[in-house]
Image (tube, rainbow, N blue to C red; front, side, top):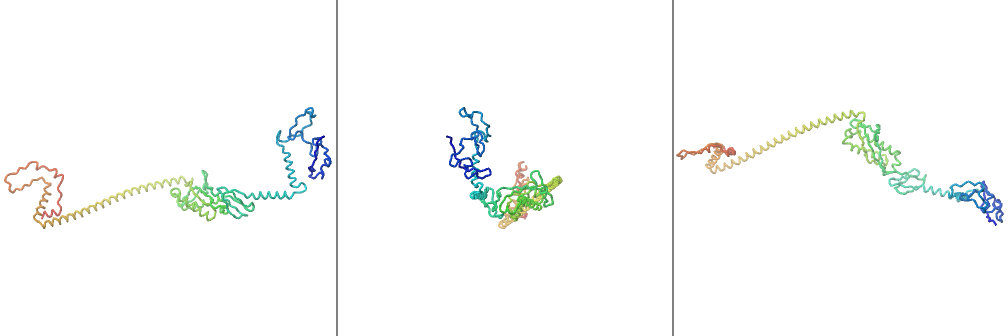
Length: 429
């Protein structure tokens, strides 16, 4: 006896309505009897249409033998399901999903309240989770409530009330920003680089500004275009400082001072605006005359260098002559001072010696006169080549050797000292 099954699931019409409150009657089934259609009878396709030929996986069954009665000449085969031999069969999964959705929304009778609550809850959960955000280590987050500033957040995982209640804007506070003014590389912008110096010269000046964000809320709410604002302030500050500085100072020794002054002036201006920007450095990349007057400027520079060379040579000659004159004057002055000191000391010594001789003369006049006479004659006759003989008591001629009249080297080499004025005066007396 063939096996039969009983259908228990409701059957719907193509327009979505139920076929009958008792679907087994519609399909030719008896409520208390077994189905009229056996489960393995595929002759009647039923309301779902003819089943495709082949097994459930889309594979064509092998031909049956003599006992199967199928032979090899069956009817036309149905279309193959996607996936090929051995591929997944997604048909049942889609059918189950459709059934669940149909059950959830209540079928054609209306949407169930539980489904509405689930949808609203899921949407609310997604809306609440949209407030999660991450602040990177180099950023600061500015949170606004209905457009007004609310708070600032530090790096990490943070949360704000979902849009449109609160919004967040992230600002890179540690990133160094650079702006080139006057052109970058070979591209020159004369409208930005041409300036007037303090001595009335025209200079083509290119420089760069390095800045960063110091106050995130002020940076977000005060200035609309930060880069354009910083560039405008930098150009204005450089023109003001260049207008007070000579051209030569900007090109040579005063470049560093100009950079510091421009940076300070920019910082004061931005702080007055409340821009929340800190200027780290101002660097002059090039400073020179415009290309149109470069040749004339070089001629002026050559003339200035020649002038400086002539001035330096004149200063060198002047310094040499003045130093020589000062040296001669110092030498003459020192010689006069030395002669004066010598004369004063000699006079002082002669006076002291005269006083001492006078005191001795007062004690022994005769002996003093003889001593002065002998010393005077010794000094006088020391340079002469004569022999003086006392004739008293001489009875026979005196014969002297020839060597006596020869010049004496010792006397010529070491002359006797000159008598001093007091001694000469004493001898004269």
